[in-house]
Image (tube, rainbow, N blue to C red; front, top):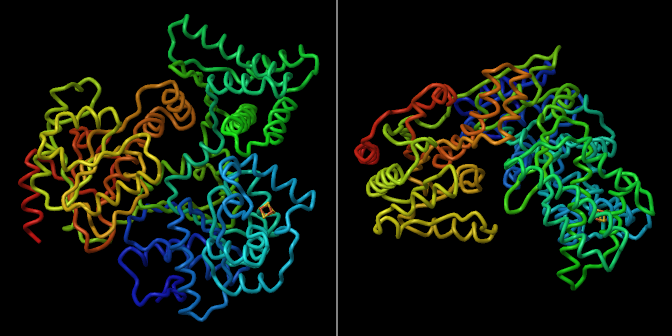
Length: 627
Ligand code: SF4
C-alpha cells in the first residue's frame, strides 16, 4: 500500500482507485482542490476518505463528507466503521442530517418548512420548554464518541436518553475526525456559520469532500430560490380575512401589485417578463407606508411569519393550508430581498407565478473553497470537470492548485455497448407523429431482442406520452409508466413492479427520480434507451443563464454551461443506471443522431465508446449471445 493508503480497509485497491487516492492525498497535503470525475465502481468513498482522514488525524483537521443522499450517508458511515475496525483505530465520526429531520419533536409542518421550524426550536430553547435540549447526559456523549452510528441510530439512542440528537451530534463534532452531513451544512451561509461556531472550528480546519458534486450547483441555486403563485396570495388574503384584518389588507394590496404586472404582460402578449428587484420592494414599501399601521418591508415579512406561527392548525385542514401559505409567502419575500444576482421572472400561464432564482452558485461555493484547507469534489458524472470547476467558482481562486481528473470506468469495457441510432431525433423542427412512430418502432424492435427489463428515458412527459401512443399492443402491455404527479410511495411501488417483472419496460423521464439517484439492483436493466436530448426550451431563464455565463466566461462557454451541459448531465445520469458492478452488462442506446455530432459528441466522457448504427436489434443479439 502507498499513496496515503495505509488505513485502506480492503485487501486490494482497484484500478483507478489508487490513482484517485494519490490525487486526494496530493490535494490534502498541498491544500489544493481536486475535481474528480470518477465513474461508478472506482470505490470513491473509501478512496477519498482514507487519505483525507489520515491527514486530518495527523494535522488536527476535520473532514466534512457532504452528501445529499441518505444511501451515501450509510455508505460513508459503514466505510468509516470498517476503517476503524480493520485498523483498530480510535476515530470519532458523527452522522448528521438536517436539524428538523433529527428533531424528536418536529411535526410534519416543521419538517417541511425550515424557517418555521427554526423559529419553533429557537423559542423552545429560549423559553426553556425543550426538555431534550436542557437535558445533559455525559454518558450518552461518550457512547456517541466511541461508536460510529448511523444518523437513525443516533436519533433513536438520543430519543431513548431524552437528549436533543442534533445538539449531541454537534457536541461530539467538536472532537470528530469526520462529520458526515448534508451540502447545506457548508454551502448555506447561516447554517454553516452556526455549525462551525458550535463545533469550534474555522473553515481553514476543514477538509471538505463533496460527494455527487454534480448536484451541488443546482442545490445551491435551489436553496436561494423561491416562487410565489398568484393563487397562493389570493387564497391567503381571503383565508386570513377573519383572523387578521390588517394582514388581509396588506396581502390584498400585494396581490394587486402582482395582478397589474400580469395584466401588463398580457397586454404586451408576453408569456414571461423579468421583474426588477427594486420595483417590487419599492411598490410594497409604498403600499405599506400608506397603511394605518406603517410597516417596513422587513416588518411585513416578520408580521406574516409571526401570524403563521400563531395559527393553531391542529385538526383543521383549512388552517393548515393557511399556515403553509403564509410561510411560503414570507419565505418568498425573504428570498426576494437577496442582493445576489438572480433571475426574477413572472411567468404568465393558468397560474401566474413570480420566481426568484439564484444565477450563480459560485457566490456561496467559491468562498468555501477559498477558505477550507482542501476540497475534493467527486462524482460519477462530473464531466466535464472544467465546467463544474468554473461554475462552482474554483477556477477563480488564486494561490491554490486545482487538479481536474477524469478517470476511466474500472468495469470491463465489453460489458457495456453504447449505440447511437442514425435517423431519429427529438429536435423541435423534426418533431411530429411520423418521428414518434419511428422512435416507437425502434424501441419495440429493441424490446423484442432484450431478455429482461429495460428502461426508456424521455426528455419530457409530453414526449413520453406521444411516443407511448405509437407502441404496438404486444410491447405496450409490458410498459410501466412514470407519471409526473406520482408520490414517493407510488414511485417505490413502480420500481418494485419493475423488479418483479421478467420483462418490464420502464417509461420515465430524464432528470427525474428514475433516471437519477436510483440504484437498480442486480443488473435488472439489460438495456437503457435515452430518447433525444433534454435541451431546455429557449425560456427567459435559459437565455438569461446563458447570457450570464457568456459575460463571465465568453460566448462558447456561455452556451455550453447555460444550455448544453445541463442536458448532457441528465443523459449521463440516465445512461449510468444500468451498470453498477463489474459483473453487470447493459446496452445503452442514445436515440438521437445529434449525439454523433459536434458539440454534443465532444461533451460526452472520454470512455464513452460509441457505435453508430441503425441495426440496434442485431447488435443486441450479438452482445447478449457473446456472453
Ligand atoms: S432543541 Fe433539539 S429537540 Fe428541542 S426543538 Fe430544537 S432540535 Fe428539537
